[in-house]
Length: 421
Image (tube, rainbow, N blue to C red; front, side, top):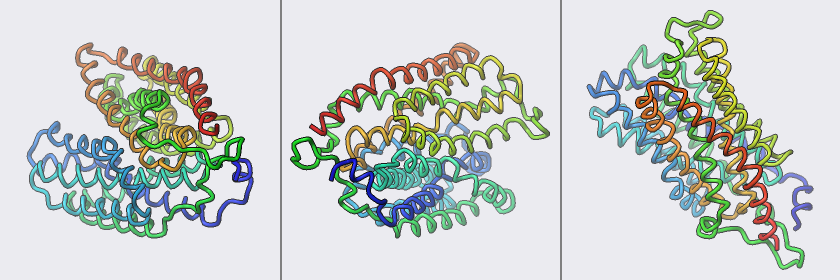
């Protein structure tokens, strides 16, 4: 059927249920990354290792989650969604349970770093692919909803996990919540399925020769459009990951310390809480906007917002109230990359191979983690201040906004026309 008929036809039954299951699964897998900071101090004291040695764990996690994205996508395309996502849930649960018995850094690397990274990466890629397929008419919103659930899902577990760590130790917290999160993810996976075949059909060409060809990974990798998407996601991701990984350090540089309060609350924890909410809310919001005004137009707005907020933070960050507000705006302008880029990729290259294709694009976040973490810290160490780092990141954001409007937009349009013709 034509794209107009397909999008105008009634929504297939059950797709909102699939969205709900995807949201639950993504919330379940968010804790390994977003509550890691709660485990750092007690783990370091228990294992008797340096902070840098312990932080290798989360670096391994990022590599296994994002750097192995192509493998996750390849396997997702060849597996039933229910089975594949459940396997991710098993790995997630097993990782935390086994980490509760880890007594060496190597055991922690394997348990928390490798197993958690693999489990989270599997679920993230598979659920994102399902939303791309189930919601061709509201792709930005649906992908944004599940990506947003990953962004703020850990809010539900942060305080309970912190309470268990304080009362019974980090090992008990890993054991109990490894079981809980694993079971929740597996239970949500059991109801997942791919949409009916007619929803997957791409528009017919003018001659009525059948469905337009979707790009296989090898074909996609041969196009400039993919590498432009990869470059842009890397550049914008760098800014957000710089703020995530260095926030406590540059907050101190702005004079925001443990004694600094905003409305009677400690400024840094308050900023972190607002940032987490903004990081989750931005994904469905900008996804919804992109469904209405286009992916590239939305990218230009969001990336410019992040760049401007980073520059303003550099100028007025010593004001505690503005520090809290602007750090939230930075996250609001960054987190939407996990809804806009997967949606744009599916728009341009089709959904038939979107699991494998998104896996390749997700690898850009592994590159961003290096640029936004160690490289940003090295620039700070060499210069002794943050202005050059902040200005560099803002420049990358502005450049990405320009590329979205003046390069990606016409390039993507030509590829979509070529697919239909």
